[in-house]
Each structure stands twice: as structure tokens, then as C-alpha cells.
Image (cartoon, rainbow over all chains, first blue to last red; front, side):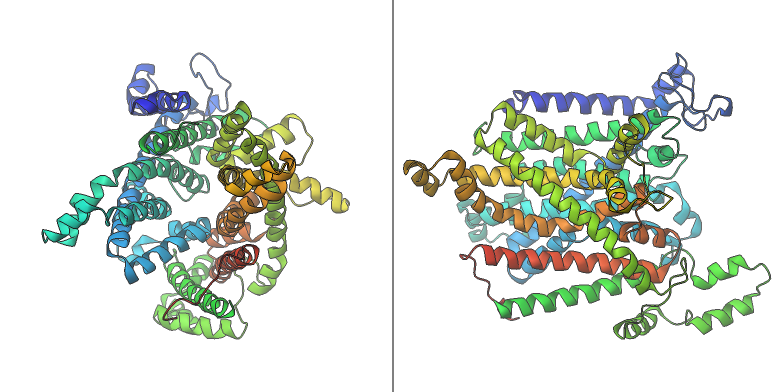
Length: 290
Length: 323
């Protein structure tokens, strides 16, 4: 950990991420303190430039841009973190099973992982995001609800994130299962599941942590793309992705609307990626500091 | 080698078949069906009419039966009509595929012609300020949301500077020829190649550094070969190998990127076609579009594997046991 804190890029990334998550968590407080609502429409103040009342100006419906950015950050970060967690959990399980059991199961699982990495994911995700859940037997009100669309988005984006984790976990499982303490556990007659979960998994935590961190970046990007295309978080709930949806038509009148949400997505993803890279260096004693 | 090739081809076909099945099923789950869409346009329609229409189009039959009907027609070359464009699906795909191939091809060329020199410069002095700057730029390249990059490029080059068009395939007058088309392609290609440049540079840099540590490089240097020649003739040729695989594997993300790029810059290619078809409930077109994208990607992967074996004589492929 000390190595991590000596890396200036990682420190800057940590700082950016903490500021972003803090403001996202405090968004309702800031709204209350400013006496405004992120969803309050004010058609007389459309596209107004930055002013003391609206520090970053207003959008095409006269809503305060800064408050919407904060609210959008809440949604984007929450979706990103939960999807990264789900994806890492799936990836870890598959990687463990693949590496520990080996043989045919390993071949099949890794083929699937390769397929997911190689296929053009975005077109497929668009279809998955467009399907009508009531045709799967969900009651219409549940299928249309906001919670369902959030859960659906988390599941969809996790589909993108798991293969990388699975490959990494499989690789370290393969090297761990030949080690003496695993052999010892096997001689003691423990079940494969117990060995995999209690003996192999804790020793594979470092790569899992790195992969999970890196997958947050990927997942936030995919969420923003889907929301931008109108298939993720739907307005009026703001997310950084869907705040950019109408920005292209207004690009001549208000280019500022196109800049801020994207800048925050970019800052988040860059920070997460830099942090993940620094974590990899810090947790792997074999890498020599460059 | 040829046995391996046949095995891989069969595998690719099986994957495509499974994919067509899955996609067909998923498209069946999209909101509404063709008859619902027709019914929505006609206020006088009665439930009996709807039932008759559904029977006429076979929509009352189970989905697997409809899939088999589609498959047998498709195998005879009949992919149906597009709802949005009222044209045979194959005509639309044949018309629009070249745009995407051009876009992806140009992006690949652009990506490689930036990534190779950048990686060489970075690997020459690992840890130096040049290397660190290039590394940071690569992080930026893989982290930038592509649609936001497109917006930024439009703001800079179309709104502020006014140098390049903000979208479209050519000027409305149609009188521009190749140069005009090229002007319309600059921003899309920049957008699409950003992430690719970054990925290639990072991989090539680490491959170069690894190769430069090998014994044969030391031998070459000891024999007095110039540093430039060591880099281009000895190190680069070996380090490019993993990049070949990367180009093949990366095709999928380029196809995904093409969807965003084409939508942002109104390029009438496959990506925009797939997006419009899914959004407009054009099932026939969406299905064929998705399968085309998947086929192209799978062929790219296969080609990369073959090129890899051709370029590196040490690699021998054998048919997997049992296949």
C-alpha cells in the first residue's frame, strides 16, 4: 500500500475519485442548501449562461446544470460500482471453477469468455436493452418501473465486465492449485469447493482487486454509451450519459452542455484506470518500479 | 494447418448458427410485433383482423418454428424485407457495408501509423518523460467516452474553427468528389481510432521492451549493428506479432465503435443501420445487421490466428483432440 501512495498519478486519481463520490453522496444536501431542485423546470431560463444563481448555467429545459451533474453522478457511479461488483463476482466464480476444475469445463468457459471479448458487444447490448420485459412474463408495471431499468442496466453492463476478471482469476488459480498448501488441504480430504473458496480464493485477491478496479472504468463507459443512445438510464432521471443525449443538436447554441457531463465521465474513467494500474504495480512484488 | 483451419471454420459456423438463434429469440422479445405496429397505424382495425393478420404472417406460431422458417429461407438467400426502408434486407446491407469497411479500414491504418512510431519512441527510453507522456496519453485514449470525443471534435473543428463538416457523408450539393468525402471522414476516423491507437501503443511498447531485453538483441548490439537497425529490423519485427492478434481481437470493439461514430456523424454504415433498425423495430434488418457484424468479427479473429502462424514459424497449430 505504501508503494501506492508514492505514485503521484495514483494519488491524483484517488483525490479525483474521492471528490466525485463525496459530491455525489452529498448531492441532496447541496440541493437543499441551494434551495433548488435538480428536476425543477424553468422554461423562461432555458440555456442561460453561468450566473451566481446557476454556477454552470441551465440546460434546454432551464434546469440547473450543476445540480443535474451531481445527481447524474450519483446514478452513474452507483450503476458503475454495482455493475463492477456483479461482474467481478461472476468473473471470480467462473475463473475459480475454470482454473480449479480444469479439463472440459475450463475449455468451454474460456471459449465463452473469449467469445464475449471478441464479439461486437455494443450492437448486442442495444438489442438486450431494447427487449420488452413484459414479454418475459414480468407484470407491466414492474417491467416499466425505474428500479427494473436500473437493475437491467447493471446486469447488461456486467455482461461486458466478467471475462477479464475470469481470465485473471483462472491464471492465478492455475498456479495456486499446484502449491503445497493446496495439496495439503486436498490430502486432508476437504471438498473441492472448500479448497477453492477458503484456500485458493484468498490468495487470488490481489488480481481480483486489480481487475475489479479496472472493470469499473469499462462499466462506467458502457453505461454512459447506452444511456447516451437512449437505452440506459431514462430521463428525467439524470445520468452523465443521458445528459449528453440532446447535446449534439444544441452544439451550436450551447457547446458547454456537451462538455461538462463528458468531462466527468472522462475524469472518472481515467482515474479508475490509473488507480487500477498503480494497484497492479503495488500489489505485484515482481514488478520493478519504472 | 489445413485440418486446424477446417476445424476453426466449422467452429465459426457453429458460433454463427447459435448466435442467429439467440438473436432471433431476443428480437422476438422486443416490444410489439410487425402486426401490432400495423395495427397501431390503423384505428379501424378489429381484434379479429389482428388475429387473421398474425395467422397470415405466422406470428401465432411458436418462436422456434418461426426461427426454422427464417433459417431455411435465409439459407436460400432470402433474408426478407426491411420494414423501415421497404427494400430487401440484403440490398441495404450491400449498400451500407462498404461505408463501415472504409471507416474501420482507415481507422486501422491511422491507428497503426501512429502507434508504431509512438511505441518505438516510448520503448527507446522506458521511464523517461517521453515514455511517461505517451503512457498518460494512452490512458486518456482508452478512457475517453467515444461519443464525447466526437462532440469535442465537432465543437473544435466544426463550431469554433469551421474547418470540417460536423457530419454527413458529403456536401449536400453532391459536387465534391473524393476530396469532399475525405473531409467528411476525418472526424469519424479520428473518433474511431482514438481508443485503438492507445491500445496498440501500450501493447507494442511492452512487447518492444520485452524483446529488447532478449539475448539476440544484445548479440546484434555487440556486433555493432546501429541502434536504429536493431529497433526496426530485430526488435520491431518480433514485437509486432502480438499486435497482429490484437488487431484481430480488437475488431469487435471497432465494430462497436463504428456504431457510435456512424450515429454521431450520420455516416450511413452498418453501425447506424443496426441502431436505427433496433430502435425502429425493423426485425429483419436488425437480425441480418447483427449477424453481419458478428461474422466480420469472427472472420477477423480467424484471419489474425492464421496470420500469426504464418508470421511466426515457431507456432504450429494442430487440430484439437477429439475434434
